[in-house]
Image: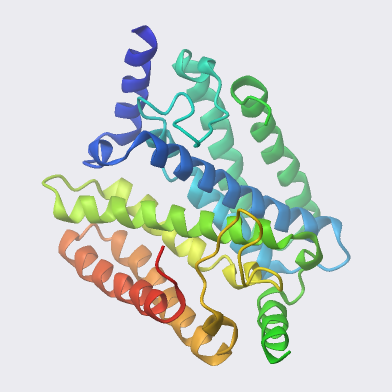
Length: 154
Length: 154
């Protein structure tokens, strides 16, 4: 009951003003948030390859960093709707129950992630590979912090 | 043989300067491009709900439009690597063979899509719901044009 209430509150928070809440099915919410994370991860991987490789492609890093920032700012919280706390048929979710029980902590890790995601988009625009590498480390720290707290291992 | 050559050319075009080409497995390439399209589709749906509903949330539309533009500019072409032309085990792809046989046409539909995706991010920032609705129509037209040509039905 309390979990349900928190989920609703989280969803309301993320979707204030949106009329989409009702339209999304739990299985689609799970698939869509996982799609966002997968695309994020690909973008992070591209930046990593650029800062660790021999060639640095400024345009590619900028595009990847902007994608990371855009997804971070896209309101993913709206994808944690009631019914999406656990697997829906063959659609698995890796989110821990704790995610829905600690709104304050979720808000904090989300805020940390967004801040570092926006920062990497800014740093990328300078083309300074060393600065991008340092910022990628900070960003990765916020990914890990959330995974450690709220993600079950595959 | 010719198809393989075109795929390689497409991949090279999209990833010039990137060191990531070798790292991506075909199944992951398929999953990642589908993730991008799914996240795009969610973003389009949010804008649609805003311009067709009673409430218009400017911030939500801006965030969704920026996500669309960022994904459009993210270099998705790099996800059409050799080996990803057909299903890989249980990982299905809906891309038609024509996609890999007509580089010029793919370039055109991609360019059209990118142009309208960038335009919706600009229009969204004005908060003009009618203009956003009109631009969403243009954007949707470029999605459809590509699907009609290069996507098999589910």
